[in-house]
Image (cartoon, rainbow, N blue to C red; front, side, top):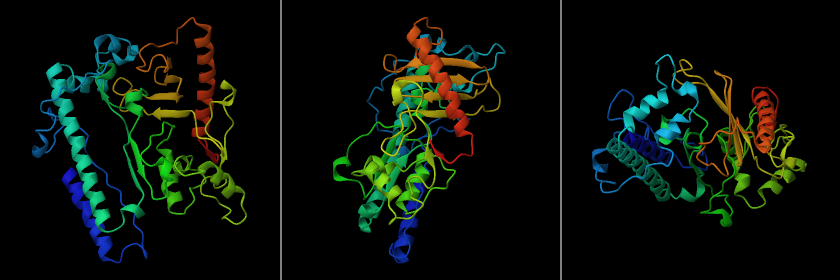
Length: 355
């Protein structure tokens, strides 16, 4: 399928080139790779192309520190339903990672498929270069979810842990200021920001009900100052692309203003996460969270179950602090529970806000 994705993209670009290139009609191209998805129902799971099978052949893939029985037993009780049903994340773990040799086999095939995507992207970029458009094209590479590779005794996605919710994001943008080229940034960017970013690059405003934000302010010189100037300047369109009448919400009541969803001069430092129940609560339970860089609050609505993790001291999210007697933890739990409810209410509202 990756080869087909590549061929489809090249055909589109060549057709666009043959019809007169960009002056009359700029293009938008979305290449949605199936890789690195597994094939459900096939015991092989990850199926790279034959020519990739020698890759990583002599490598040993590291086993995650949290891929052990002890960490699995620390998962909430409903991951081991008394009904005898199996949580789908655990079921897929048995398909892929329940034996060391199987784990190595699966991960090598997974990385082979990822390398195939990397090759495909390189071919597409080369075509843009040959057309003279590489430096005139904004390119965003990202995915829709992370993946458990046996961390917490699980496989696949669906839950609020770091392995599941963190995704790659690589942006090449002709407007990027030189000092940001080739650098990394650990700000909280979200999938809701993608539409706002693409629209802004095209000179269009986000819809008033969109809650995301143009990410280019993070890599353009004086990006935040540019937002403020554009929002107040009478010489620019009244509906400025970064806000379009939307407002930033107040910071959280705790933390002295350090926890917020952004402002005219700053990027968000927290966000609300959610994933719905799939089929039934034993199969894939719904999960929600308030995510910050120091702490994360989990809420499992099907079971009214809460968790709190100190990400600074416990990045593997192993030690649940919900029942901690430490006053610091109890205060943090109460504050994050309150803020979680605020952000959830706002996320479900029709208010014209930026989250």
